[in-house]
Amino acid sequence: MEQIERTWGVTPVPDRLRTLSLLDVGLLWGNLGISLLVLFTGTFLAGLGLQRALLATVVGAVLGTALLGLAGLVGFERRVPGMVLLRDPLGLRGSYAPTALNVAQNLGWAVFELYVMSLAAGALSERVFGFEARWLWVLLFAALTTWLALTGPISFVRRWIRRFAVWVVAVSMGYLVWWALDGADVGALWSAPGEGGITFWQGVDLTVAMAASWLPLAADYTRFSRSGRAAFWGTSVGYLVPLVLLYGLGVLLALSRGLGDPTAVFTAIAAGGLASALALLALTVDETDEPFANVYSAAVSLQNFVPAVPQRLLVVAVAAAATVGALFVDMFAYETFLFLLGSFFVPLFGVLAADFLLGAERPVAVRWNGLGAWAAGFVLYQWILPTGPAWWKELLAHVPGTGEATIGASLPSFALAFALYAGVRSAHAPLGRRRARLAGSR
Image (cartoon, rainbow, N blue to C red):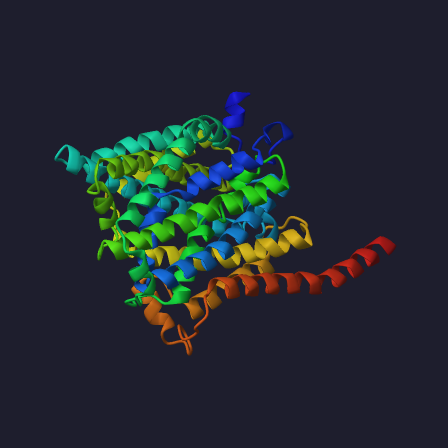
């Protein structure tokens, strides 16, 4: 029984496993939001200045986590993982395209998480012991990640977060916020103008993208929730609070410490004294929940392709690939990576949200109207905010009006995908009913 519970795959979750309360779900997503990677990413908004950066963070966090909470609610209602949810609006084979993207993004996030964790641990060990040994930290954190992913989400919440992580996070974050405020002239920073490099709506999109990167994963965990209330509010509020807190902390540290290189934020904390170094160490160990989620969800997503393959085998394979990647990752493409993820998954969730509100359709291999609505949303996102490899951006530069809009890309792409899919579904519904009546009269 325990083995089955730990490796529950792509079939609907039975009632006996739907045990996560509102508090459990909130702690899970709150803990996932407390991340060195989120702190690191927050530094990218420093060019807006403190005042506008915080405003962009709040706006993006509210929008992004509302979508995330809705994704969690869909997962609870339909009881299956995120990639299996897409079988209805896209078709069984149509769901393979976002599944491949989701596996790639989960693997990428796991690589980045292991990299950031090893960077922080290396900064600490360099200061305390005189050696960095980043490769050693990658291997140690990868081993812990693999073990957590093998235990499954229910055990992870009950045994890891409730007993250990929540207390470590509360104390460590409380101290780091006090330390950052104590060493900064907040009044001067508040009135100082930004230095540029990023626009306000790019800052909003970067914040939305952080929450949107979890959209394909939300149902993997909320399918184990006790209620829709726990799934929605636990997910949205649980992730909102740390997202705002850590983006703001990253901006504050970058501005008050004059950090030109975002990766220097960890060195600055490590050099801030014994207490700040210990807080960084605690958050680094707790950071393991991030690659856990990515490795676990990548394995569950792969089961949409190969449901017969044991989940535990897939967990080990994904963790091994992430470990190799973390030893050779290029962090300079990170910001583009975040924007690119948002351009895929925000409009994709628009299609899923419309499908959820309209109700499931009969199973098909490929549902072209869903794929078409998703593609249209992706194109609009890229037209408003072109992002990706240099060759792709150069190609888009030949399209009239590309990159000239002053609005954010996330909400328009979501709305377009939602409206197109809902419109086509609604237009086809009367025709489908007429055909059903004709078939019944024969």
